[in-house]
Amino acid sequence: MKGETILTVDDIHCGYDGVPVIHGLSLTVMEGEIVAMVGGNGAGKSTTMRTIAGLMHPTAGRITFKNDDITRIPAHRIVSMGLSYVPEARRLFSKLSVRQNLEMGAYTTRDRAEINARLDRVFDLFPILKDRANQIAETMSGGEQQMCAIARGLMSAPRLIMLDELSLGLQPSLVDKVLETVVEIRNSGVTVLLVEQLVQESLEIADRGYVIQTGAIVHAGSSSELLASPEVRKAYMGM
Amino acid sequence: MSILTQVVLDGLWAGMLYGLIAAGLSLIWGVMDVLNFAHGEFLMVGMYVSFFTGFLFKIDPIISWIAAGAFLFILGVLTYKLVIARILGKAMAPLLATFGLSMIIKNVVLNRFTPNFRILEGTLLEGRSFMIADVIVPLPQFATALLSLVVLGALYLMLTRTRFGWAIQATALDKEAANLMGINTEQIYLLVFGIGGACVGIAGGLLPSYLATHPDVGTLFGLIAFMVVAMGGFGSIPGALIAAIMIGLVESLAGFYIGPVYKYIAVFGVYLIIILVRPKGLFGW
Image 1 (cartoon, rainbow over the protein chains, first blue to last red):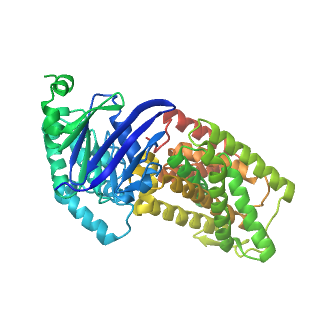
Image 2 (image 1 turned 90 degrees about the horizontal axis):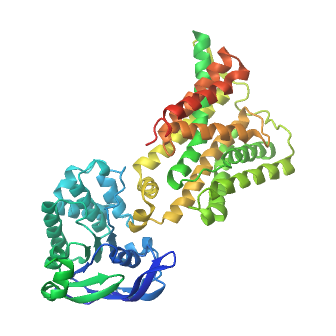
Image 3 (image 1 turned 60 degrees about the vertical axis):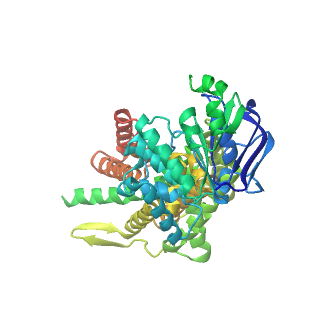
């Protein structure tokens, strides 16, 4: 069920050390959608995600989440507003256990009953994590670590979760499983903004998509439109 | 045999105190990659707080360590807020800045309180001891060691068993990812500097029960703390305690069996050997 606009990124410009990376990028995400942002390496996908998450701030433009202007709000405050970001390369707290990582995902709440309820929910979604709850995060396999990273992102009970390059470093069979999980997350009522280099696979599970190239959106539309677009197929799927 | 036991126990008491002094330094390094060069001077300030609390208000160091810990917590927080936060992540700048801070603290104390050695007389534990078989246990050193161990244990439990402790560890492991969890990492840094200060403040607060207070007293303790942290592995609290006890034992054994003038040669020699064999310290990774 698609609802109101939950995220609006309006003409943002940003970069690193004065070097511009994103040039006037705009996108919207509606409640209940899976939106895929796809593009090649270095296109600016992760920079866009980092900017939305508050890890860096745009030099121009505006970001609105649930009608609140979050353009200048720091990352640690954005989480409690209901926007969660699972960064590229998992970024688990390597020396902490799975359970401790998950607890940190729910750091913004102090209600023990609520934290336990959230733990139950993520253990339902990823049963393997319950078995591995006391295992140190860095000792798990890549696939398990990815599940833990997604589960940690869900522990803040977000309205919108941004998933950055979930497939990175995973074997193909695991990629399919992780993408199936993304659909389950959306079906549970959490809106998903997915960033991927695997253009076809991510568009296949998404409602809409944006194609980003050198810091700007070059194609936008429904997933079926983008999958049918000769330009997109030639440039990003090698067809 | 009783002499050896006596010497070993003396080293153990000293080592446990060194452990607490080094814990604050280790914590700050482990979380923020900052070496607080003014750590020894923090200890000296803690001693002065305890000394004057005892001298002016007749409060014994067995109580006034609380005031010293609180004072140094505030000094740690101010040091972070006014100095470290402005230069964090800029290569050697925090080390060089805290070197300057150490000189300022030492000279302010020298100017205000003169270089005189100040001895707090009539403390509750002064001159008291008890016997275990035929071994003498001096009560001031024993109480200081015991309280050091209790504070270290509390610090360790806080870091490993509480959500706040996990948030400190998370910040140390990946600051940006910690931010994404909703952890205010700036606040964590501020509190870590405060806690680091409080640890060394508590140690300094206990010391006037058996050690004279003067502006240079922190220099050697500061050096020993650096050694302990490097030997134990930067950021490891259990490593710091074990290294501290090793240093205490070497100091005591060498001081008795070789000669007092050689004890620091032995201590620094052991330090050098360990760093050559394990550059990341005994428990570093």
